[in-house]
Length: 134
Image (cartoon, rainbow, N blue to C red; front, side):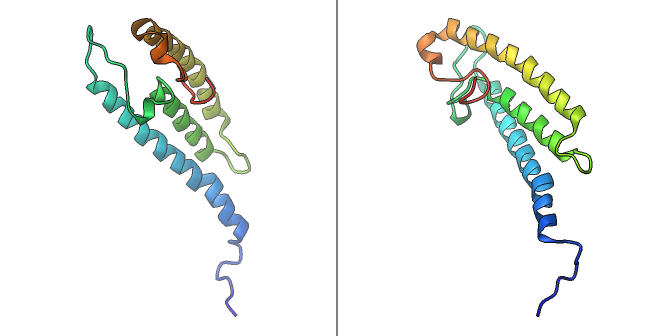
């Protein structure tokens, strides 16, 4: 019979390890790597007066995927920094709320600019910031 060499490290502890560390770390990695790719693509676009509509998988559903990934990064940090016995770090969560509001206003203005510059047909079907939501 095999016995657990660490009796205090149970299956519930593994679940907590995954939920409090591994999943938020994966969210952080996804957010930062996607944000890097998006910024790299945006930097490669022609500048004024020859603006181009951003394309690519990140831009298929939203015009501001870099804003959305910024919020994902803050969410991951809030989860990773949660104090013992809590799900989320309230201080970082408040920064997340600020980012959602601040970037949401900017995303709305960006959407309007794209609509004015490229026409309503070109922006149709894409979200302002959060794919499938807004």
